[in-house]
Length: 148
Image (cartoon, rainbow, N blue to C red; front, side, top):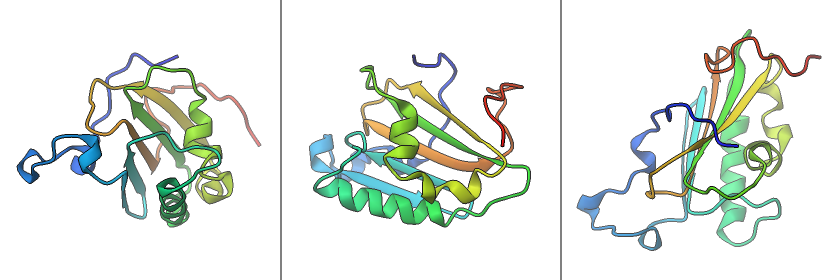
């Protein structure tokens, strides 16, 4: 089920630069990652597989490294989001968490975790993921699904 909420603004990382003469996904890198101590944003031409091969091995390794560099903040949760134009069935938590390895996000999920999948009309990069250490998001008010 795709959430029918407004799509969050992702950085220019995921957009094609027409001035660079790139006309299609085939003309660009298979993935891109941008990271800070509070946010990791990644774009890829295909969904991260549970058992990646080829370029996805590098993508997963770089994504893991970036996620391990996120700094926990007391009272904040990890907000993981997937924005995609893919309307096929798949488990969003697998793509965002399990396929990357949950141990890579464990330190920033002590106070909670929120994740969602959003529909995108964009064809710039098929899969956009964002991991942010932040206060519990407005789109998840009072919906506590588990506790320690």
